[in-house]
Image 1 (cartoon, one colour):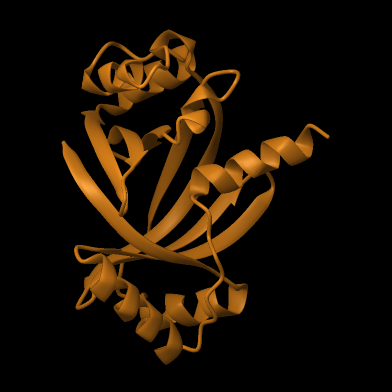
Image 2 (cartoon, rainbow, N blue to C red; image 1 turned 135 degrees about the vertical axis):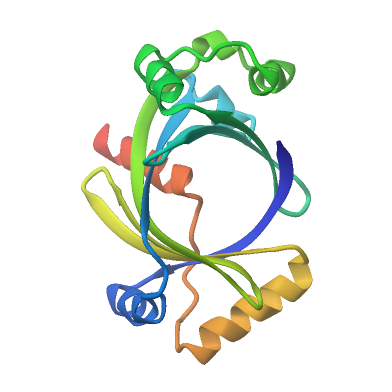
Length: 191
């Protein structure tokens, strides 16, 4: 399955998160863990791609994100929990349409390995302005908070997101992708 992901996001302070969480109480939180894959020399990152296996309580998926002029082209492959755990443990991805795309971009899928994971507790709900997700993320002894809005129309979505932040007294704080924030902790820990 492939789709164009257009999303806006902001980091949140603990106070901003708590205020929004009170409004999301009707949404059952789910916990998901992203296991990130790259080569030892970060060839995926060099090619501006990211690859992860996301595990949830009852399912998993392999996702490749490739940036487009607007948003990311997201390629997904549904996995069983057992298959996901095998791939994470063995650090081997069986040949599939995603590994074919990676190879076409000049990265050898055989060289991919897991370089870390990030666990998110997410409250996600469809709103009149798009699919909204309130996330609490835990990785490398760091906890951060984030609000994401996934939309169909980039310009309208940006305006709606800005209006939502203003209406809820939230100051915009640039949020790199989860994989980029996690990767930054690797550089810091190697010094």
